[in-house]
Length: 124
Image (cartoon, rainbow, N blue to C red; front, side, top):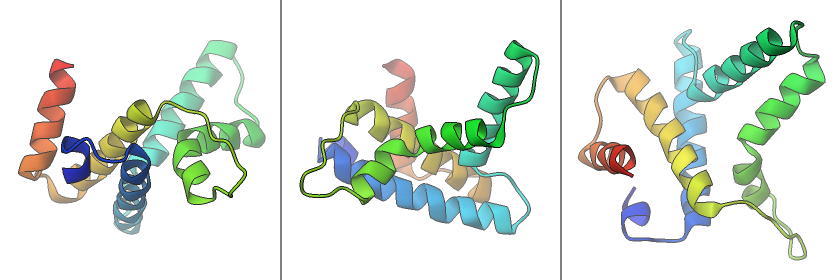
């Protein structure tokens, strides 16, 4: 959160928030609850199935999940010659939102920085 508010490197924010999203998500799943990531994939899958009248194939569900994590995974596994294209600002915000959603689900509270982020996103 500090990196975000100090206009720090958005790639680092995606990587760090992605790690938080993953760790908090695992705690939720251990408690028998759904993570932000799983909820996102389920919602997109259900919407697509309703729109097109048939359930998605497993490979289509995997493609949705891969897209949700594409920025994080691209940065995590980038090679010296790889070219990665995505909107760093949007992806950083999305990953921070997922991490915050998971934190909220676990703790039912937010840190002051998380509250500030939510207020700023609401007014953007």
